[in-house]
Image 1 (tube, rainbow, N blue to C red):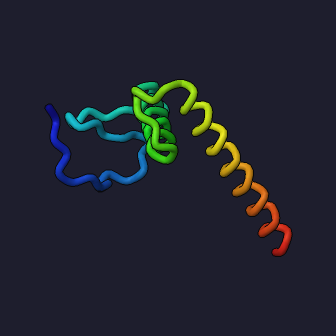
Image 2 (cartoon, rainbow, N blue to C red; image 1 turned 90 degrees about the vertical axis):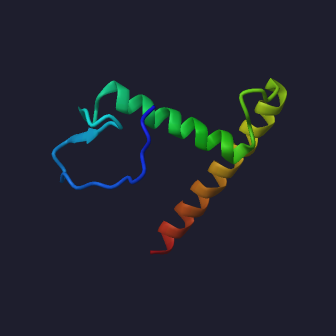
Length: 84
């Protein structure tokens, strides 16, 4: 198992990113894209209180709450942009 004690960038912006084992991949690599997608799914699950064992009915309720929150934020952002 790879253990990451420190996470920081020292290599500049050459369009690649390092994996835990030191291998470098392009930032648009499917593996890197998958990491980002899973991170977003994990964030949504944490925000809504879901786990892999959450019943589907509760997922629907949580999804609706998340959609309402997203809609509210979008309206707020549009209102704030209109003031500038």
